[in-house]
Image 1 (cartoon, rainbow, N blue to C red):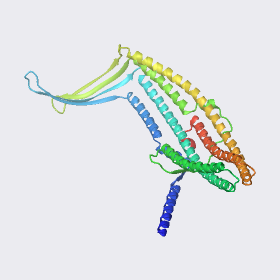
Image 2 (cartoon, helix red, strand yellow):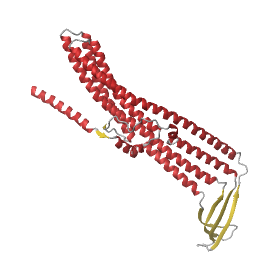
Image 3 (cartoon, rainbow, N blue to C red):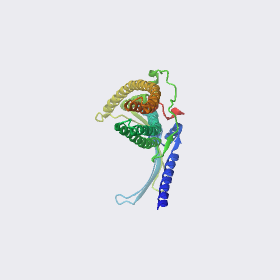
Image 4 (cartoon, rainbow, N blue to C red):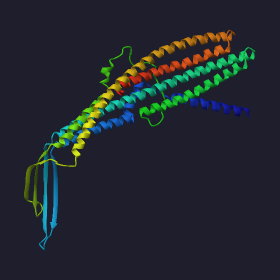
Length: 424
């Protein structure tokens, strides 16, 4: 029975090793540039914004069509009888056409309004792309942080186990109390929990990244990048100039200009509309008709009273124009505050990385010295474990500071209007 037991044990170990190895190698390394390309092709929010741009272009075509000749054709045949007379046939076919001559510049205002709304949708596409880039960069940085956390927690677990062995030796030799041993064992358990938690965090970060890439299913990926900034941020730019170039503010400006043309269109309803028209056809009692019919003329129409609808629509359009101007002003102020805030957060994050690195180096040196002192009985367990805990905190704090620096940079790039094309 013993050989059979060993075979089962070896088989279980082998299968476990294969599964772990398969999972490790199934994580596809991806770069930031690859993620950007995937998001541009697959992100559903970006696709939706692109379709809105196409719809806005078609609205221009619809408005322009009103300035072109309108031509209709008709064909009819009829057989009738009245007053005991013989049944009679009537056949006709022809074309009628009309051309708008003047409508108080209503149609031209509507075309200009649609053009400005197209600009607004194009800027909205850029805003959407900028937001997607922000979310994508955050997800990518989160995955980098999760990957780094696994490495750190595994190193911490290894160190905690070594510490436990050292405490055991001292405890068995009567030079350490049971509380220290239990604390060391709890630290090992905490370290093992941190490893499991970090691995679950990797899966969550992969899921978040897949969502931004437009993937419906989870794809194990490994971020193949380092915690490095994309540019140098030592010199503060002129924020007032940058505010006017952001897609968000330009979208508001386009909407304001569109509302102005919409107001002009409503005011044009008070002017008469002038059309020229004509028709050409044939009418006869037999088929095909042989008699020629034609007509030509013009028409002028001016509504005199419709219950105050035109006045109400004009007032509504004027109010919408005032609202759009207020939105533009408020939007510019908000952009300036956002630029100032994100720049400040970026500078704080950059500085914090260097500060946390110094703490890490200091705590690594202290842990090295104190560990040797504890081994030789020159320091107490309480003093030693505090320094060990500080080292663990410094390792995690430095990793978090690096990830937060990338996130702060992503918010800054989003604030200045950086889209997915920013990284090309």
